[in-house]
Image (cartoon, rainbow, N blue to C red; front, side):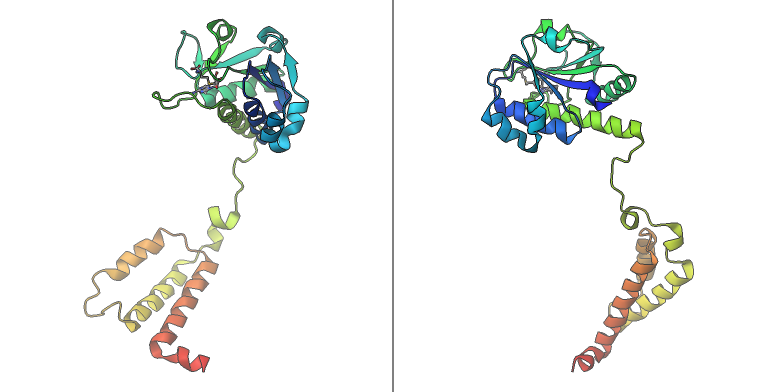
Length: 256
Ligand code: SAH
């Protein structure tokens, strides 16, 4: 489905930007690059900046006009560094990703069109687009490097594609992100831990039993927020046991 989405670069002057764009695309799973009258292509600099994405450069289609680049396209999205040069239906990058993936999923051919480094797209070129896309950058410094702009939109396409495919956008580590309920320390285990903690804090002189000042209540609140699981509980218990040994002076004896 991503092969239905092409990236069109118009009149690019710096070959390094073509290479950077190819790399950005490949990172995000896009492969179709169309170059409209590039100033310097093919070139070593483009290859160098593409890094491992030279296949995208080798497969790039070079054409003379934007019209040729858009042959067969059902949806054309033109990017602009400036907000609302001409009043036109506008999408933000997220909407652009979603719309592209939605249409590509139905077999549509999509073009994401990027302008010249120094002058962007002309008004005439922008008027060939169904929608304009503006990356909401700092209004006082709104123009991104061309390859960086390609990266942002390619990323949004990927996020929308992952969502459409039902694939997770993050690699979940079960133990880190979600503690299964059955693995959580139980209320009685927590109670006996708090008892152990209190004894230890008294033993090392941190808690004065005559003046406890709500310390245990605060610690209970802290642990209560932490979803402690069983293996973490056994680490905590181990630390307390060793701390008690040190407090009693056993640690030295053991080492001797
Ligand atoms: N001086 C030009 C800047 C062009 S930057 C101008 O003002 O139009 C080169 C290309 O990168 C732009 O044509 C556009 O395709 C893309 N780009 C840069 N910043 C962008 C932004 N904030 N939103 C969308 N596209 C942007």
